[in-house]
Length: 76
Image (tube, one colour):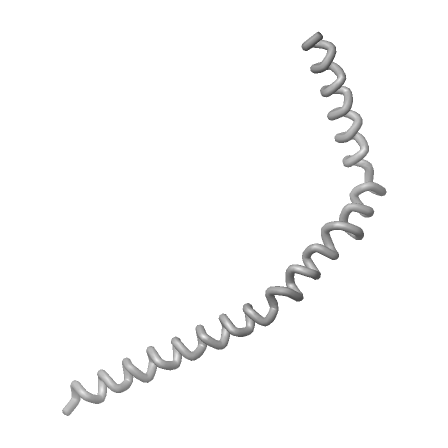
């Protein structure tokens, strides 16, 4: 009974893989699943990416200002 199940499972996997390998199926998956998913994800994360970039720039500017102040204070 177990070998019968294994053979059926293997056949199903082979059929699935052959269907996935077709160019038409790849295009459908890309068009209807992958692109909308990435678009949705990017739309949801966009404000956080902008906020992260702004915080990074502010931290970089503060670090540069601190370095400049330290260099000036050591001269005198």
